Amino acid sequence: MSQAAHAYAYLRPSAVLDGADGPRLALETSGGATPLGAVANPRFFAGFLADPAPAAAALLAVADVAAARYYQAQLRASLDPVVTANGDRLRFESFSGCCGVYARLDVLRAVLDGDEIGHGTTNVDVNNPLREALTRIGPADPLHLAVGPDALEVTTFDGPVVEKKVPLPDRWLRGFAETQVTAAGFDLRAELSAAEAVRFLRSLPRGGGRGTVRWVVPAGRTLRPTTRPVPGAVCLPGPERLAALQRVLRHALALRVYGPVAGDGPAASAWEVALPGMRLTLTLSPDASRGFSGEGGVLGALATGTAEQDAELVAVLLAWEPRIDVAELAEQSGLTPVRVRAALTRLGTAGQIGYDTAEAAYFHRQLPYASGRAEAHNPRLRAARALVTAGAVRLEEGGLATVTVDDHRQRVRTDAAGALSCTCLWWAKYRGGRGPCKHVLAVGMVRENAPAVAEAAR
Image 1 (cartoon, helix red, strand yellow):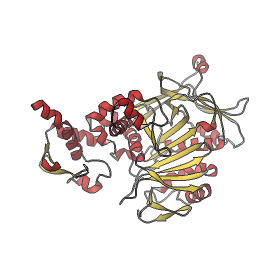
Image 2: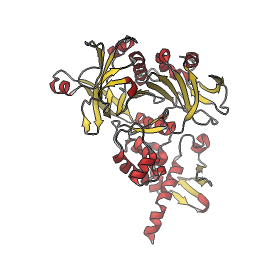
Image 3: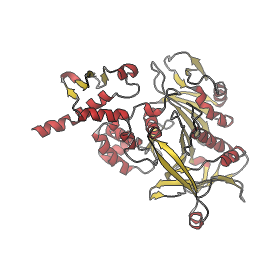
Image 4: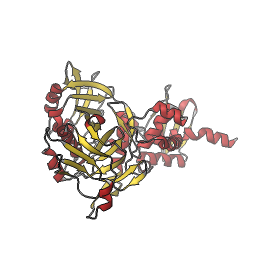
């Protein structure tokens, strides 16, 4: 697994501190991107947090996912959660070490009473003493929240810096990218009341039976298990991976379930617990042993040259918006909505775009990844480019193409709707369910360049 070391540098550990107005939750930040550029320890908010008990429990749930590996659980994960300030909310995100569970807590303006919420993205320190302190926060305690140190603290601080060096595997970056593509294809499938949500989630296994794939279907006010993906069903792959939601059940207002139209096999799904002024969402990969990093949903956008150019243009127009309006971006950039979506997908591979299923909208953030890193380390994309360079692709009439690899020939076909298929084993196994194979990608690259090549030959 390719990975690079990333260093977090916090002025001090995050902690719950005693104050004159009650406890103060000080979340320390490291290495943030802001509208003014890179900042070592940015400050995004200071004020009181209404309903502190559900907020503390939800933060712990996000931290649980960041520290967990649901597949090969004996291996340790160590990625600190990410916080993005979008001007009207704070978003806390994390990814499990196995790349199969994505967690996000949206803390909305309604429960944040204080300074204006800033704009930018950073990591926040979550340590064991902080976790213990969060478990002791009660519903009656007024809680002051500070995300990042203030200017005076930064300029006068002369103590030792808390440093953490952690690996950032490329599959984590690909996981963040694939999650937003996957979630963009979800619709709301079911909504349960607080009582039904608690009853359903507490009925799920917390251990054992790992890797089990289940389906549930709305039935009256609850969800009924089913043995197969019947119409209206939602896949629940590895139900034990929803364990982090147990922390917030006593504060739950509702449970909303999102997913794609039920198909023939396992599929990803998103499980959102509505809290007072907040939403906690866990998105599960199609299988506990199958992280989001291998889904291949971003490969089509990565393979096109126009998406790369369009992404550079669209990136200039982003400003940590909580909801990205595709139509507005199309008007500002002069691109079609289809090209804007492809550009957003490409930006997502550098960690710049997320997707909020509750609002059915993309949002802007900035993770500490270099642009193009996911593309450079994607094996299928590298193999496709190698095929193009080797001249292995021959375009034919009728939407057909032949790709020659050593002594094997694969046939790529295009149907009336423009969808491509291939005769290779990868396609036979997944039927496009995990993105295009290398042969389909290579044919797409050659077809994109064909008009330019023909024009140059004249």
